[in-house]
Image 1 (cartoon, helix red, strand yellow):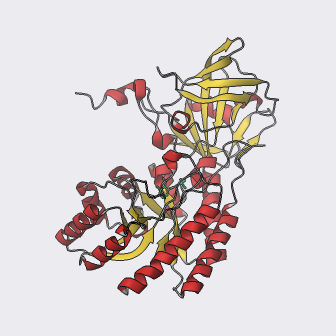
Image 2: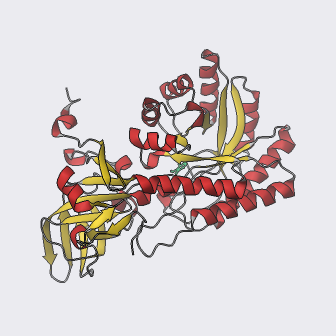
Image 3: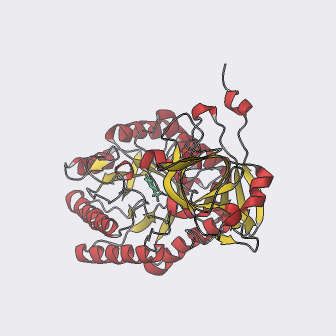
Length: 432
Ligand SMILES: Cc1ncc(COP(=O)(O)O)c(C=O)c1O
């Protein structure tokens, strides 16, 4: 019935996450409130790692893409689970560093890393910098030289694969701002340039074809293209690169209609194709990296809101307004994403209403969704929006000077605050 295993209904009929009653959490911490299930996050990490062990003899690393949800406690949990960490900015790196995340397991991504961010990465001892463009390559070489270091890198490649997902989260095709294109020969030139630079050590290739992808075929096509390119590099330059990072992008359930492949099945197919293509090209099996973000934290999150007004416009629609919206979850405004919503007090009751869940900002597009089935809702009720663990907290804004909600982590019914609620004072604290 639910889109995530951590969600259940207790004997009062209330929605629970990781066995904690969501109404009790709303009463204790107030709304809007992000709630995350620690058990679900850890289970998701372990499912990935066990699959990598089972289908690829553990010859690789699962790297959590922290852009999906980055705060100190998430970084601690990811470190405890033994995963690597993908960071994409100085801020994400700073957060990881502040909990002493092992530098050698950090992968620094992004199409625009500033000089000061690269210096910070070198100083912290970031294991791998995933270089996006030639300017960054030569800048990094100079900065590493200044620190007397040789920095290990991967190159981000556009494999020319068109993943079937929303255009804003599609990244593997030639018309993308990320990485080096294969078709134009630019990727091979970048390899040759990297090999020439003395403070750079190129050890692998990276690609990421998009996000919220349900179809495994585009991933398998990317594997074929990338291993083919590894073999081409060996033939044309004599260089054998030993690492292949296939990025993230595995889809999750947002509504009961969604049917993403199991991670296990996905990893089995990817491993099989890597072995097949390497066998055909007589190329050594690479160390494999996968970078899931959404599928680690997405299903583990729920956002709780309080209903303000219910406005029925006869023959048109019913607006239900909540005390949050696009400032804590911009995904509907950005991608028309769909969610499952529930009246947290009557989670098992029939869904008798269809509503437009409207945020509080001065923006008609500030919606969490339209035409959403839900149990009867009245002012004061608690609404739960499910599967909000990824790209909600991390994409939050301060539009209309709305403070960001706190984050509560739950494990086996025990709750703890991991990010404090922002206050109005916090919002104005840096104003001069
Ligand atoms: C380079 C890279 N790796 C991994 C991810 C994570 O993708 P997802 O959250 O869909 O698994 C992203 C998402 O944008 C990305 O850009």
